[in-house]
Length: 576
Ligand code: GLU
Image (cartoon, rainbow, N blue to C red):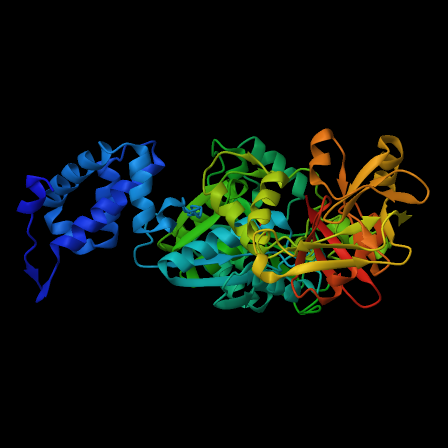
């Protein structure tokens, strides 16, 4: 041992003596490990990091520790890789195995969140959530969980024409599935009086008016930075009109309550905006109780204030809304939440539009909100996409303001990481073609339920009698062309009628023989619902009946979620 080591003495701390030997042994262990992982040369910094990570109490003496590490590392580095590996094996063979690093998915820090986050997700109950909606839900939930606080689900149902009565419950279920923790639920249609009172106050403050102009002419005037004649009518007239607006004195489109901004605002989208409008369409929850309906910017601003939102995290498409809502905050002198706008996501190849799905369900094109051809959260769940994967996807996407293209392949990759370990392997043979095998009395084979988990056991095969197997139509074609095929985990076959047993030498694969999945007579009827709505019909091995897991991997086909086992197997394809 070198001089530096013998000089290094730990003092007693908290009455407990830290042993010299233990530290030195640890340093040597990690130095050897680091050296073995990095072609014979350990990095002292990495070793110090590892020691400090495990023994934070050494932090106070880090320079002392560093010089000790330095000297042990230089000794280890002079040993040569073979000796290092041998020495490491002697200490603990497990140390020589590189740990698979679990990838950490984490959002950037959130400004102003030190004392907790009060946030909301504000879905419109026009249908259940789709994959696009999950981003706002996950981001808000992640931050509330990280910093503590409160997350409210606020159902923004102020457009009676766009409400699907079942959506309130469906959205709650979807959030639950996603693992989003909701602390409070609020329905905006329960709060109309609050919005009415605040609008009245704004009118009284001279910040609002009731406009009875035709919508088009009001808009045209704004484009020319000109006020409509209603804008400057005296307050008593405004209030009279306002009472009339609330009490049903105007028909659809005949009057609106408007919030004043700056009629000459350089951004035309921000020049005065509508706060309340007349809608005669009955509200699914409130019937015809109200005729004046708040527009989003009014109800959102008031609720965000009254519910004490500290952070509003939403997409960049809400940027102009934020500016409008800030006018309301300013008129009342309210403290504003911190606003964050992440970039837009383009989700290709997905049916997301609620109205289209609804229409499809109505006319029988779709089987329901969980139709696998749609991009709803329900469809994802049905296909065996796990909420963890969806969450990882959005956390990795983060809060950046740049617009992004959604990648199904990335989501599937993340889902594969989540379900691979728990998905046992089985054979599923679509469009089965029968072969009888001759040339041997009986056949035996076995395949692990999961190649990484031998402890889970095996699917064991025993075939005698006519030794009937089924392979897929596509593989049957290959068999007839190539004249040879391998039944995975069972045997090789030569093409003939009946097929001829050709030994069990796996090395035929090296010469290009294809190994295919197969089933025997002991198989069960199975159907695999594909993402395009088509159904692969075939046979699955009977061991699948006893499978407890939610998802499996059909070898050579892909992952699938088992949807039902009564009357054969019904599975839904996830991804490859
Ligand atoms: N209800 C709005 C929407 O679904 C969200 C409002 C908000 O986040 O401020 O687009």
